[in-house]
Image 1 (cartoon, helix red, strand yellow):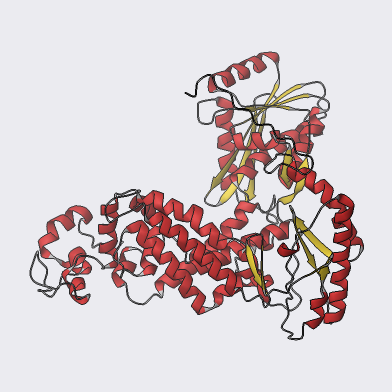
Image 2 (spheres, rainbow, N blue to C red):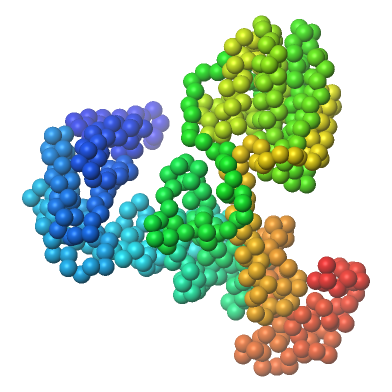
Length: 571
């Protein structure tokens, strides 16, 4: 029925931008830019995100504040009339962020001929703002949305059937948690309240039970450690600190005047000196052409290119970076002219920065030697470094410096960046790798960081702070002596192994670690089993998880086969 048929839809708009069009946001930005300039010239702070425009007026006196806001509203109304546009007054909200009770002057605010109503809350860009900024409404909305998402996922699993545990864990991390942490920079102070921590723990508990299929009485803290999930209040603070760091590196961060509120996040999340060091992040620089070429080809094609350039007498530089025991270094090798460079970069440089620094060293040597009209081949086994130098956008100071050095060298020479496969027996690459390892092992002398702190290094420091906070909370958690003995801290290897099991196996493992399972002692405590609490295998002691794992003589042969002569938890 559907074969050889054609459906044609003709849309002939007379004005406006099509919904979902590729150019629609750009066209609207070009139009609304004039309005934002008008408001700015009037001294009114205006912020626009697509077609959502916010006016912010601040003042001590309500009358003056209302008059200034009316000036801005009249400006918007006149601009809309001139552009042939309309503003829907029913979607325009006025929210006074104040604790003052006499707000009668604000009742005079009008948009055109429509009187604007005063509201106590407004939702803007996914955040629910209340007039006192206590974030109760936002938190309730976030928890409701996250709980709804969990309940939707709950339909996909049963006791011993459904999606695999690692899929359920991924869904929670990728979908539910981002809903909770969104915009956490402005409302993270709310999680300091104990009642909020209880609500967040209750939500994460549902996720842990869904993933593991554990008993409903299982302790939340133990399940979080097993699954490698940070308590949500710690996670929210960590995400807020990362957002603050991004704003700081972009020069958009402003400290609060009172020293309180969300701007104190840098003091609350103390990650050591790393976040206060010079950053490698810079504002975006865009280029449209490069005087050098890059090539990432197959292994065989790469060997052929190396052979061809060697016959031409090209200058060939092999570069590599290394990271060993938390220290980085780079190496540069060239067979002709004979060059062996090995240098240390200290503790704060990433392996990517080491690769870029090695290429930068080659370009600097070429510029210093004043090479002219030469074929220069720089070979690196880092595809990430070559792709970064081949990009049209630069956000790293080190990569930008390397790009400029390559441009200077390529202005008088033919410069090519080639990818060479690592550890494939290519002599030059092996020599560069050896030099890079020597550089990483060499003590570094001088101020650090050498290349500036990368964003990944800063975020790693924040992640370490969050893991340390989780570890301290786990060690001070009351009860669960067996769980702390078996799992001393969060371990990504254990978590990956656990969620790779079937749902039934994950449930059994969780019961053994938490002690909340089909053990006679636990069932008797819950009032489910009124029979004997003695172990059904040895009939000597109460049947608990600790007894089954550590003490039961009937399971001694299996225990020794699994653990040898070491008691579980001793190592």
